[in-house]
Length: 247
Image (cartoon, rainbow, N blue to C red; front, top):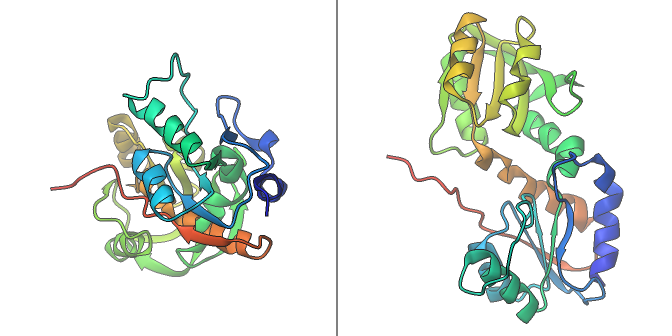
């Protein structure tokens, strides 16, 4: 199966016109006529991931976070960006990223469904999701549930509530969407929160849970399930380790 056929399937599910203006979704590196028998899905486009794709004999790498998000001034094999490009080209690996195109369609749907909910709706921004837990939980029980569901080694939270029933979520950097949920949900889950967001959570009686970007690793398994129904290639899951270490 050619890479361009897989890309067509990706863009049928996650159209590029749905990406945010600042984003760089789509083909990152490679020849779309490349024959693909094995592809890897990973959260991040980094040296560890491209090396893993090479080691496992993949001809295509699909990542959530794009490799070409920041401008490239030059291509130097001695820095990580140049090394990534050289490795991809040398080993004939097509690199494709979905990021906010996928975010706008599926990411937050997958994240909120994993918690066991019903009555799912989009937030005012159309990216976030709001839902009701199938079973209301005490705050500490809910925090344990979040940690177990997303396999989080560590997370932080702010605010106090007695019980959690209505929740909202935005994977990645969604702290600036938080204001729309004041008085409407018991808990808001997102990443990249700052001190002021913690203060606002306390002031507005909201449980704010910072689940980090790594919770988005859920897309690896979920996207594999989507593609396996439509592509005739072997699909493997990249390891996608967390960038942070905790102590």
